[in-house]
Length: 250
Image 1 (cartoon, one colour):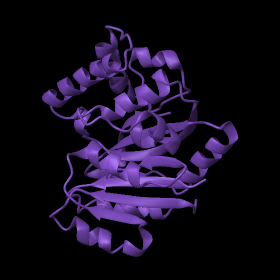
Image 2 (image 1 turned 90 degrees about the vertical axis):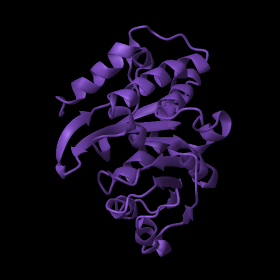
Image 3 (image 1 turned 45 degrees about the vertical axis):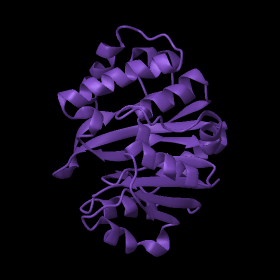
Image 4 (image 1 turned 90 degrees about the horizontal axis):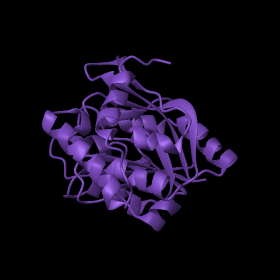
């Protein structure tokens, strides 16, 4: 199986090399690596160009934000499976993609997901939050559960059938997409109990109070645009899950 891994980047000169190397160092060889840059002007492009002979596709052009760039990557991808790693994050270990492919092959899954850790941006060896996903349970979605996006790999066929990221979402388009694929369309989903992505703490949905409010609204909107009924408690339960992750280590 070919795996397409997409990195979306904009002005991440200090971290993009680490992200790239975490992909290039994977033990699994059948990887198509795509980088979509939003016309960086801080030296990021020059860093990426050092790896030009190891990157399958690199484009650098203006886009309409994170999810627009992700959709560009999906359109380019020719793999059977698609995964993402952001320019300031890394794939946690060199055998992650190999284990993901084994899970797809042994279960005939549409979606395979694992765990994710958040680390201190100034001290990447310090884990500040552990997102232990656990076994898939459809009903958990109504209680604020979701798969961690950067630790979720999805068959390209699902994007072909059900579309990509919504352009009218700013922060939670990944939540909406996975709700659409996994909950609404009932994609065959399997859990891989290993940390797949290591992310620097401080993403969009975890930032300012304004972003938290936007994220919560978009979670609510995700259910509505898919014609699904939403629990009124999800606005409380979803943040509580994040809080619990601050104390979970195994």
